[in-house]
Length: 550
Figure (cartoon, rainbow, N blue to C red):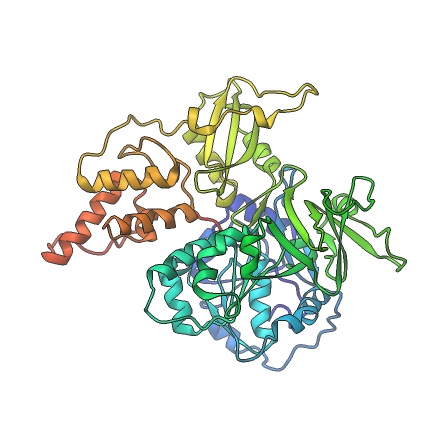
């Protein structure tokens, strides 16, 4: 409706802190806010006209039903999606109608999308992977299944949804798919999936992680495709079909080659080509480049430069800040970020934005945020903080402070207090010299209390394995110890393997071993005797805000 009326949409995820939502509403100069009544209390104060779809349906029903008279052109803005900014200020990326329509036109030959396809809207609409899911289904006349939030966070339930709905096109980040793979393995013999396409994006894909799936299903049905992309270049940039033979190649994250109407260059700092095998910055040219950053001409000029390899008037080149190299066969291998920007569960995160936010707290003099791999190989953010001498240092207080100002995917899994930040001989912070967080992590300010019952010991052992922490007490908070939505799924799966039935929702609501053990015990007794004092929880229960649907 927004696009048909000639407007552009700005997706707002109400799990974001009010401060961030307020910035986005103000920065985008939103004139109309379309929402639902149950979300109103989560929104910050704003000046936009509010249209509440469920509350105002009688008034909406009286509006005209014929098509609006608008003069939308292909170069009008279609949407603005905000990404992390190194200065502490999020950047609104302006993407046009032309950007989106050419994405599907240029990839149609590979995928053969049609009205027979069934897609899922698995990811948050504030994450640009959702653009591919939403419009991929609707522009081709297919069916779109909107995945409920808790289903997207419960692999077994999501697997059942895929089977029940006959989903044929599935888009996943590698982190989310690893969880789905395990659910699919456990459901062996319960009926197959209808998938014909499995498309990866959002973060680096390690080919070896797909071995169990490929050995079970082969590489033809479904076909597996890896697509590298950036918000500023409209979702996808490259295409790479994945084959069984790739498992023996020993390659890293191979992203293939550019889609037909884009060009990917590997350049040095002087914007000159580098030889095959030599690392350089991935730069993108072609029709997919966004208009730029909303109200930030300086940043736009720095990132979207004139294309030195094109004679076309106004041709531009986007400097991604990603590191890659050409392989001998011409394909591109993704190597990571040139700067300190990282991808956490598919979201691009500027550690500088987290550092800038930490700097606003009186107990912090300086800080540095880095991404470290945990025992499972997943990246987790770690903040190193030098005491500012204001209010007493408290890792728990700093987490609460950040939780009110940043999305959940930007919250550090650990906050480490250090006397000083180590420096290189050039006077810059030496990130490699920072101590591992498991040596000095401030786990909790509560006194340690060991598990007392069999259920508590089992849950503590599961948490210890999943979080990579040697000692877990019954009052330690799963999420404060570094847990996140992906790790919570692993914890639920491990607990079930150990004979304890629980759901992600229970873990989100009961975040310590002691609390969770009581709930599990109540549920088991309820199956036998159903005591009168056991019933549904009817009051509001605060949930830990999780990363977006990935």
